[in-house]
Every structure is written in C-alpha cells, then in structure tokens.
Image 1 (cartoon, helix red, strand yellow):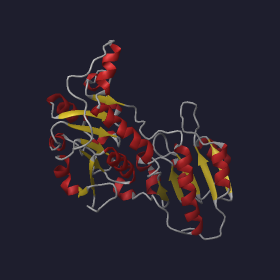
Image 2: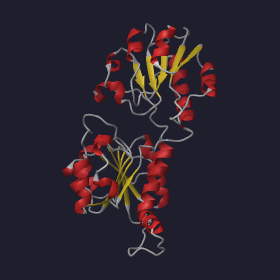
Image 3: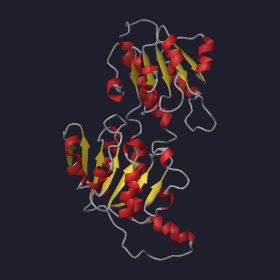
Length: 331
C-alpha cells in the first residue's frame, strides 16, 4: 500500500515496433502526465536499465515476449506492474510473479472487438460464407444444397462467462440466440438465459450449437477440451476458441472434426506447434483459422490507457485496484 500524497512516477515500456499495430503515442504519454508526477518512456528493458530510472508503477506489455525481470528485481520503488494485455502467462513464467508487487492486466477492454469477431465466425458459418467464397474462386454462382440458417432456435454457449463474454452474449441475444454461460459460480448474468457452474460444464455443452471458449489459461483449464469433453458437445456443434490454444487438445479436436461429431470450428487461438504446414486443419472445409487477432483493434491502446489511468487514480488515492491477478491460481 502506498502512502497518500507521496510522489508517484510511472515507467512506460513498449517497443512500438513498425510490425506491431499497437503503439504508445505521444498523446497517451500526455494523458499519463496529468495523473502522475513523472512519466518515463523506454522502448525496452536495456534502455530502462541504462537510464537508472525507477518508479512505483510499470506499464508494459505482459502478454508475450521477454519480460523486464531484471528491472523488477532491482527496483527499489516498484509496487505495481500493469500489463496492457489481458494474458499474463509470460509474467507467470518468470521471477516477476514471486516479487512483492501487485500485477494487474487489461481484462475487459477486449469485449467489443472479440464480440464482433465471434459473431463474424458465427454468421459466416450459419450463412455458409466459406462455401460461397470457394465457389467464387471457381467462378461458380449457385445456392448451396443445404439452406443457410438463422440464429432463432439455436443456443450459443460461452465457457468462461466473464467481461468479454458479456459482450458476446449481448450481440448473440440481439441476433436471436438463446444464450447460456458457464463460470465458477452459477449466478444470473445480464444477456444470458441461464448460467451453469463449472461442475455442470458437460450438461451445458450438450445444449450448445455454438461453443465459445473464453477461459483463461490456468492449470485447471489447460487441456480442458480433451477427447472426453469434446464428446460431451452437442453433435454438429461449432466450436470457437478465442481464448488460449492449450485449452483445447488439438489432436482430439481434429478427430472430432473428422468423425463429424463437431460440425466445424473457428480457431483464433491455437498452439503454433500444433499447426505445422502439413496440419490437416489448414485444408478442412469446416475449419476457419485466424492469427489470434480477435482482440486487435485500432482503439486497443486507447482503451488500455484509459483503463490504466482509472486504476492509476485508485492507486494514487490508496483505493483498491481492479483487475488484480491472483498469482497463485496461475502458477
């Protein structure tokens, strides 16, 4: 806990690579200057260490790549590491997790783009857009043998009914789906027709025409969708993974698709090791692969900074922070 009224400095560290669309701009640093005594910006840990700068708060990307473990260990002032990614697995795989600091993430800012992306997968599957695109490539213009479908009478389920799930549920209800969710505790949620507890996951899966996976990657969720769990899915269900690749066992998924038990899938998240050039997933007509971009948006960093500043004000005033990571649960 920090002392109210004491000096508060912020270190911002992000490469702003030309290959990355997510950039910290001057306007973001100006916003932070209005909430902190001083704001330092560095492209990488090497620059940061060479500067000798120190601060109570570090705002950096904790979702992928090498983490600033050396700085965090050497800092005399650091109390809070805010990752402007939702996933913090790299932080949990290095010594930063063992330090006596608060770690928060950007949970909640991804809802809109991920909700829109999810509905894109769903509508594409219902209206048979992949088949239409294949026909276009062959210069064929004809209606499919099977009629395109609508959401009415169908159930969309969200496994991991949290902040992002609420956006997906809202869009799904607007389209006319029955929406059910699964989370640790079965509590009523807006936009959901029913919510089940994790213990009733298989019961819920048996009702879902669309299975949207939104669980974080933990020891409990790694391999959650194995052969047995996929068998519990409703025959013909369409599986959408926009969470983390290891939540679904790829070999079991391929078998469920080949057998026809699953009607298809959209994979925004999959382990790269499970998707070599000769993977059958590339050529399956009922599989849609995207490069983990469901949360990507030109508004991403704007939203991340806005959220961070809200928490920064809480920190400065000595109020509790939101989006605090339960480090023990992710080890």
